[in-house]
Amino acid sequence: MKAFSIFIRVPITLLLLLLLLESSSCTADSSVVNPCCYYPCQHAGVCVRFGTASFKCDCTRTGYYGDNCTIPEFWTRIRLMLKPSPSAAHFILTHFQWFWSLVNNSFLRDTFMRLVLTIRSNLIPSPPTYNTKYGYLSWESYYNLSYYTRLLPPVPEDCPLPMGAKGKPVLPDVKELVERFFKRQKFRPDPQGTNLMFAFMAQHFTHQFFKTNLEVQGGFTKGLGHGVDASNIYGEDLVRQHQLRLHKDGKLKYQLVNGEMYPPAVSEVPVHMVYPENIPADKRLAIGQELFGILPGLSMYATIWLREHNRVCDILKAEHPTWDDEQLFQTTRLIIIGEIINIIIEEYVQHLSGYMLDLKFDPSLLFGERFQYSNRIALEFCQLYHWHPLMPDSILIEGEEIPYSQFLYNTSLLMHYGVERLVDAFSRQPAGQIGGGRNSHQVVLKVAEMVITESRAARVQPFNEYRKRFNLKPYTSFDELTDDSEIARGLEELYGDIDALEFYPGTMLEKARADAIFGESMVEMGAPFSLKGLLGNPICSPEYWKPSTFGGETGFNIIKKSTLKKLVCLNTKWCPYVDFHVPRNEEEAKPRKPSTEL
Ligand code: HEM
Ligand SMILES: *[C@@H]1O[C@H](CO)[C@@H](O)[C@H](O)[C@H]1NC(C)=O
Ligand SMILES: *[C@@H]1O[C@H](CO)[C@@H](O)[C@H](O)[C@H]1NC(C)=O
Ligand SMILES: *[C@@H]1O[C@H](CO)[C@@H](O)[C@H](O)[C@H]1NC(C)=O
Ligand SMILES: *[C@@H]1O[C@H](CO)[C@@H](O)[C@H](O)[C@H]1NC(C)=O
Image (cartoon, rainbow, N blue to C red; front, side, top):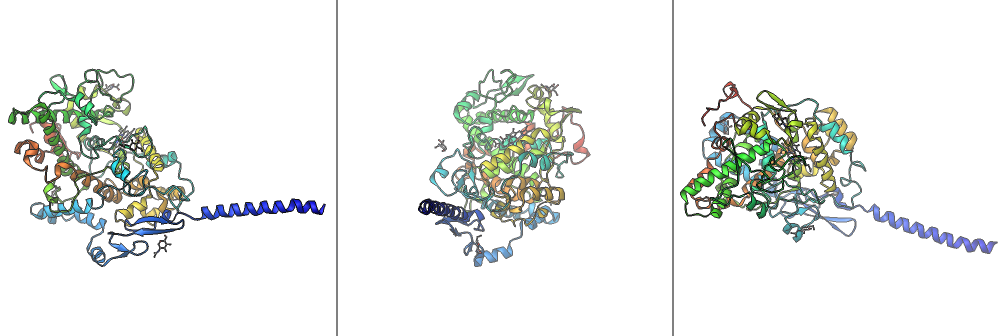
């Protein structure tokens, strides 16, 4: 009996010992947290793991040193003392009328514009760095254009918590987040006076480079031009471009309806366009961007740019009767790209910024600076540009209220009203405030869910890490993020820790600046991506930015003198009210007549 018990006890103790060893080695392993999950490296220092539990911050050229890149070098200290905070800079740029009226009309305008461009674009790494697969520099990440780039690497896969090392073990339910903090209660117009003409421009413009490939996971884009390439007009690839081209005088194909030029029907130009199945090919419009059938506002812009392209072709051909179709087309495309960039900087960004500094599109401002003429679209840029709160409760056209059910994929509305009357209506109708939360119409709520779901799959780092990356102080509490105590309490309950707040909810729910369309983070993070993308275009480089590139002074001047108003009114029978701002006074608010001249 004794012998037996020993016989059995020994193996049991051994087994227990083994189990203990096994489990202790197991806990030993998982208790070693990847130190980079704590985001120890400040000021854009790079965290590299060594062994299992140690790390090093690479602080090279950050202007800081020390274990975590926290100690400023001498010149950094000086710079920090002289540099105004982002909120101070914003305050100055949006106040002191007398000062800016002096600046606007002197050489100082160039000085300030150059400062805006260099300070902003210096925040964007060029060549690009990470992507969704590679949280470290790699040739594949540099070379494979199918990825969106990333400013910050993904949250490491082996972190103890979804956002790194802080917050709750499970992220908030997406539906609940959207329902509680994104869903519109009552339409809140943008206090900066933004209208639908702006909203559709935003969507039309950005969808040339935000073209997420939803068929595969992993942060891929279909937009290989990575910037202002006008692929929303000409198509992404050569096959589509050739289908859309007339192959005569450089022009694009079109159809005439009541003597007016519109994009051709898909029955004539068989390119793929996304429409509900029941819509016949002769009602579908063939446009560079396959998604633009969804909203008459987008088909309207497509019509305007189509007319502009063909108008510029005529002008070029008159000066260059010997040029073939190809040269007329290619040169016109460069002019169109120039017009887009000019209008976006001098009117769109001007409006959005609220700056009293008169913004200027002049690539030569950067010719003396160190600046790379290349661009790669970042996943974070795409995420933060989901400005769906812009959309109103319904669309108002000449006293008629059109619900989304009759607006989305409506194929008759554009030609029924014509470009003039649509521009007029869209320019008069206020758009919603983007920031501050609770302003997204039901029809776009699903999109907010999709952004957040995508960002989790892509393991986008916490909002506060991006605040730091863009030289902003990380928020220390939810009450600092927003004045809306219901949102603050709700977010605190769901996330547990401000350092675990996700990127997109952070940019959208942050309190808006006084009388502004959105908060500090959207501007401080969005502007660098935007300006780098606009000025990083090859046409802005010293080799391209000269008259010959655009067929001579005439083409060059079309770019430099382009405005939204000319874009519309040189291509319409009469000139409607056209602006990115709702009417400011009684004069502008007066109804326009078909006889109004430009
Ligand atoms: C009623 C109007 C609109 C509808 C129905 C709509 C719908 C959608 C849908 C279904 C997506 C795809 C979502 C996803 O896969 O993640 C999307 C993406 C997007 N939308 Fe909208 N949208 C509207 C207006 C706008 C406006 C005014 C903007 C202004 C900037 C905008 C910006 C974007 C951006 C940047 C994306 C990401 C595109 C991409 O990653 O490929 N949308 N929208
Ligand atoms: C650097 O960061 C680590 C991890 O967050 C922290 O434990 C350490 O105290 C920091 N070191 C210094 C010098 O601040
Ligand atoms: C300077 O120019 C901008 C843009 O044209 C304008 O909005 C602003 O009112 C001007 N500032 C002053 C003080 O005149
Ligand atoms: C880019 O990477 C994806 C995923 O690894 C791959 O499927 C694709 O073929 C790559 N593209 C190129 C041009 O190498
Ligand atoms: C398209 O818009 C027109 C004009 O508002 C409207 O009469 C028509 O019913 C709409 N069509 C659809 C399919 O909703």
